[in-house]
Length: 115
Length: 118
Image 1: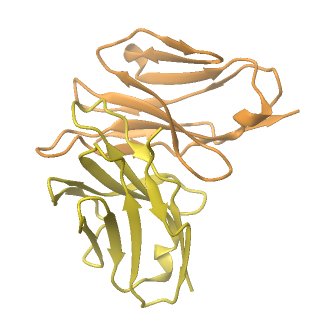
Image 2 (image 1 turned 45 degrees about the horizontal axis):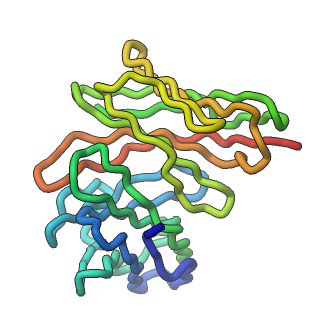
């Protein structure tokens, strides 16, 4: 069964450094998302992406964050200057074209640890 | 505002017991979509089921069943004859308001941690 792939599974970065999290969505999906989950807390929406542009973003997704689909298969999340509070599990998700009842399929996540 | 409440933070049962996970939602949409996801200890999020607001039929899939009650804004999840492998955090989620060019993001509840002991 096709799945969403995320790399790396764990990223350790010094505060202030830039980090790029990578995702390969399911191939026929057109809608892409990033969510984050701070340890022990609920999953929070960051951003959605469709037709090569951001569709929606949350308050969390400030100027330090950006997303890109550079080559038609990868979908990346960049954090420009990481802060301690960026430590979390980051999930990429994708969904198929169609109505809003299409489920979002999640990758296994990237655990980001900021030191 | 859209909101999902999972009042049960943790539930512990013994194997073979039935267990129900509660989910209450708030939305102003007349059409909306609800989902359940499972997060096992390994951390990934696994899609379990979706429900459209206009389809009030309850659903059963093996040991899993879902009870959607529009009148009480609830979408509860029951595991029958629980097993140790069911131990996970279960999240209920609501599909947000539709914006042009988007299917809408998911609003998650805080999750219920289910521990099934042998």
